Length: 102
Image 1: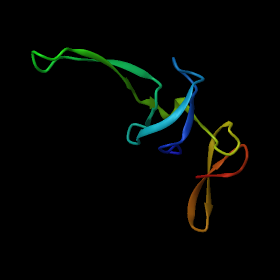
Image 2: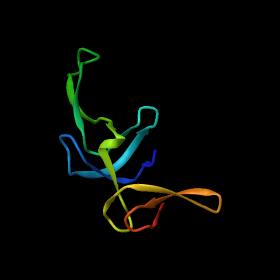
Image 3: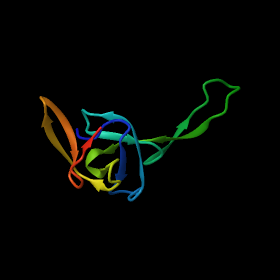
């Protein structure tokens, strides 16, 4: 995957389209990412003991990687990512400003 943890991304489609946030977690097998504070879902938790109360919590659920776009840290634009081989190592590169991302 071309998106990594701590990258700033913008959501392209869905209920949170146009919003941006930081990637917290990546599921590479499913090609999904979790974006901080976006794509929230509510989860109902039942009480474990009689003295506790049940509650509803909000969790950030995973979104498919095709529905997010990387925001370049150099030019601050929404961009695609290219791969460039330099000195035997693979680097990510912004397609708009041609700068190496890391």
